[in-house]
Length: 374
Image 1 (tube, rainbow, N blue to C red):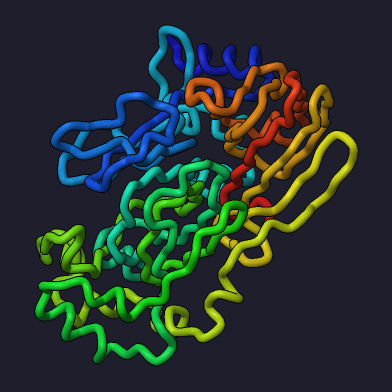
Image 2: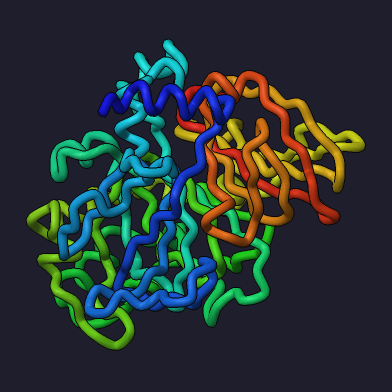
């Protein structure tokens, strides 16, 4: 079986647009059933509360499952992951320059978070520390809160720290490791639908329960700084010291300058910005290149029964949120994980046609990797 020939034929037939199978990853925090699947229990492994999209990242969990987290191309009779086809046809998928610059990787992982309780207060490392402690990529991420009637029990996120917080305030809590007083050091912000936050690597945070579209660098590492979660004290070695070996090393993972910036909210709060508007289509930046340097993202709305010819500088993930239509003839529909996720290759990205075939507005997101729009 010549996989490259099979893939090239598929890409030709689909005019550069590939359907991806949905990928769900279990975590220990409960789900609320907002990912479009009926059974979201993963038994002893927790709940299916994260959906990973256009993923070339293997999920890091206490139980190692082969290929967990990787996105699979939807081709009848053939099992091919996205990272496989990026290696098979990097120039067609990513463009010659982008493929060379980014080692044949898309460069961004996108998730939908469906959490029924806030995630513990944690931090993702910056470049030097990610390499030193985990031999992994750093992890900058950004959130956009999706329109869903269920915002969960606590749609607030603890982000950063109060401006007067010092290492001397945090270290004793980490040393005694028996409560959740760390959250007293961190302001909580309301999660408004249609808004979001940029979370730079090194920024400590505890995401709340609003349904969240998250874009991030391709990485799955970090340290948790919250000893007690949901009334239980967790293992310090598995959460805080899973990379650093001392509390003093751990607190240096935090970017103290950014986390205690008095203008944190103003600098890192995301509000969509109009790109253009006409009778057929409206485009907004949700992950704006003015502040997002590791990835970018748009929300696009196409009017009922209208078509839009569009052009982008590079490949992207397309996630349909509402409505139905086609992208270069490939059907897409929001609300169903089997029909809402596409990867638009470089060949199609530079010139593609989107048609709204339904009676309602077609709403979708385009997520781009680094250097495409920055």
